[in-house]
Length: 445
Image (cartoon, rainbow, N blue to C red; front, side, top):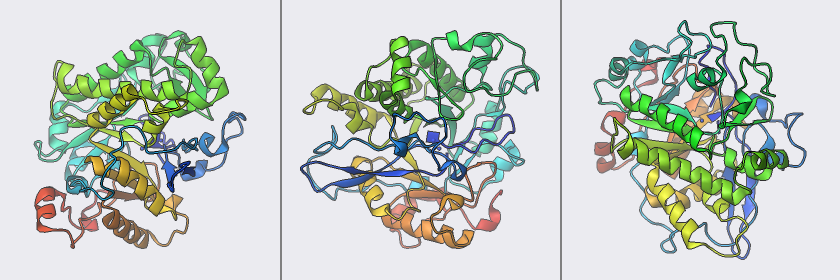
């Protein structure tokens, strides 16, 4: 999803909540009648074409700004997949129905967010980035403000955290560079990493430039994981109920882009796609374990939501002739660590059946709710916005996903929540409680 702490809209995805349109690629399972489609990261509708500087050696389907990828065909189910029952019980996703997402904008204040009718909120935890704040530090929402937004803890609030990319408006960038700050003090974004005060490229967590403006973290390093733990500490201290982990799909880019593999070797990083996938799963597992038990303000109920990368289990075993019990156990731990997966534009695509099948098999059957964020601007055949919402709401009910619909991927406002289906069972309605979010007229758009 786009991050715009400096009040500058960045039309990129969530992974990027990759934010915005998504490229879909077919995956064929050898020896089985199994066709699935990967839905990846995130990029907005303005970035649907291959960037001029995208590495020529990488599959065009995954180098586009959307962050999606074309997995290599492999036979059989992914590691950790249950072998029985095609139609196991689906989890109760009712609690997530009616959720919303906002990162910045004119209404990005505690008072306005508190009035929003959504059942749950995913928000950027800082209202200002370090590069434009007077203190040269991010201005984060306080615990009292989060209490207001959460309505005294009755509505969960989840904070954004990017695990795969770096941002110059974060505190860690300032602390490493040691340069001047304040509005206009730092030079414009430079994808080469040059020209910034200090030498951020010497930091252990500095990975490599990627695409048009992304700068990747060396996510496998201890130094980066300590930074992530520090940011989780901030979320816990300020009263957030969970964390939304963006850009985990970058493990795939590291593992498939020849230029990034060369950079990884220089950084003593994982050597291939399988090792990268396993390293990313360990990062997610570490964050979850730290937040729920190791942190000073640990919360055993702290939620972890990942953005995209539903094929990480397959990719973890890339290059191996058979399923590895250690990798299978790691994938199981990864799934146990997360509470939900978010995908973008899954419900608005023509091949929704293939995408939904993958998500049902890998996540719903394991009790992990699937959240879908669909953008009107990225729709293949957009009607008016209200009709698009109706279409997405119907698809969400059919597939048992929780959905949110926005006009675009800027996330500078909240759009009306999608109400729960009137056809759901009484038990489902009891579960969702406050998720019955009311009419569009109550939106804080």
